[in-house]
Amino acid sequence: MYSSLRTVFPILKFRNIGPRCNFGTKVSWPPSTTEENLKSLKGECVVITNCEGGLGADLAIQLAKLEAKVIVWDKNTDVLVHTKRYIKSTAGYDLEIHSCDLSNRGDVYNAAEATRNQFGEVSMVVNTVCLSSEKPFLSTHDDLLESIFRTNIMSQIWMTKAFLPHMIAANKGRFVAVSSMATHIGLPKLTDLCATNSAISNFMAALCAELEHNGITGIKMTTICPYFPQNANLHKNAKLRLLSGVSKEKIVQRTVDAILNDESHVFLPGWFKIATALRWYCPNTVSKLLKQVFIKDSNSALLLEDPPKEIVEEVLDIIEALPVNASEKESHVRIPPQLGNATQKL
Image (cartoon, rainbow, N blue to C red; front, side, top):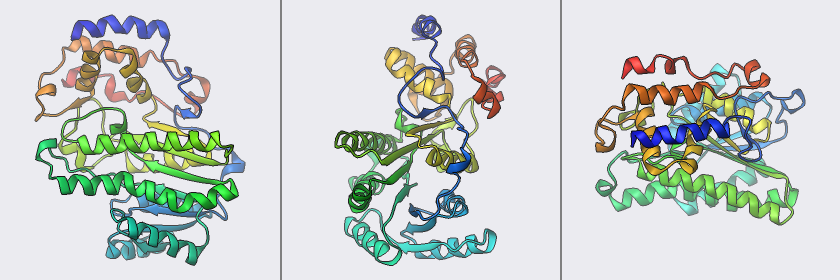
């Protein structure tokens, strides 16, 4: 397996896979520079799902700063009330709240109708739900799997069905899905998360293509794929070998930048799109090795063995050699310094 990695690396260098390559429209090497005339969402009515964990609440604050009317949906009424009070006391913004069980189709449609009746037509939906059982596939009960799929992906589909017709009529709107890097890589004990995250990403891409095919170009789709968040429960089963988790603040700010700059797919950190591209350029053994280099799971037979230091050094050399243009230097995008001495930690 290690020899196959050396075979592929010269190809990567020759093809110069880096941020200058065009992997698709608006697939960004973050962070983008927000134009001054885009720094307002005044008049936008935004629904954000899930405020328990902080990400949804912080996004609500940032979008409220841009003068959007923000309504947060969550199943837990106590969490909603606490979040509303917290945002009012710390940021001074009035947050609208609505109780909704995202795993229940009827509840989602009822919440959508109630939101429209109370606050007007919704022009943006931001979905931050990202659940996982964190169990081996065969140990996960069918009822739990169904609940996770309903919450992670079906809720996105139901909300889209509820709010899309008005957006089509206005030829204006946006759907944002804060997903994870599990969209692009398979991980042990996260089969439900990987499957639903991939479904969300492909659903967004397919729906965007369908709308454009029908001449509807004013509705935008944005998928955010961050590396594992800091302090997330996923750290239990996806131990990070070379990188620390991405901070919640970075995920929030990058999501806001993507919204304001009409980006369709965002990786965080941005150079991770190179690693995901390797899936299509490398044999399966290399993909497994790259996963082994970046993620360590002490409970997985696949990842038990540490890769040789020289192999890790080759991986780091490829990453550090990636071209960086002027705009990226201005925005302080760098390969994390942890990578420089990563081999000493293995």
